[in-house]
Image (cartoon, rainbow, N blue to C red; front, side, top):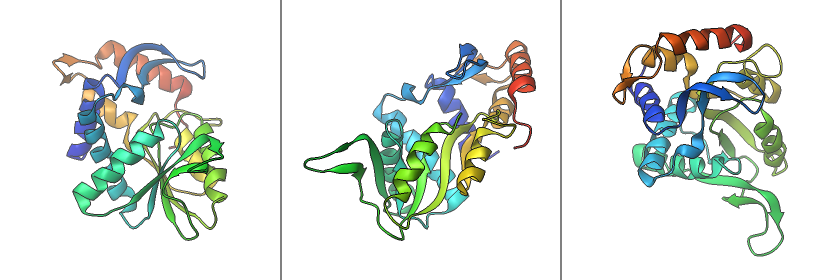
Length: 226
């Protein structure tokens, strides 16, 4: 595993973004792990987060694209932080764009924030995590309504590697449904490899008990094909 991925996993745990225990998800599933990107609350955390996203985007898609699109609301700071990081790390000045939940009819009117989208723009969508694909379901028509937009791909921070609406992972379902690549900075397999019976922040966060709970969870909800 690349060093930046190991560092990102540690960072998620230390920031309180990735937790292990007993959680009830919006889907109703009982999960032994939970990710909340809203726990990134400081400038230094957002700076580091943008750098991890920038490296993953560089690895998966290169930097030959025009716009980072972060769906409202969590995608807005992700897009801004990552656009800054791409400029600092690679010297490439990409634009950022986001949507409003409701269109504005005065001043800077319209449904979009940031850079306007135009025919020929190549767009990378950036999100925190994909569990149901609902956000992309809302985002995709907005992007396509702007003209001849090419979706280069989707990047999320964590692939939970569990079933979406069918038997495949939610990330793969999104990829196939919308005809675009979809990737994550790290997968839960990476997380387990990094943290199982290893100290992070002075303690072991995935011990034998948590690992057994994760195994049970994936036996019931794990994606059948990844």
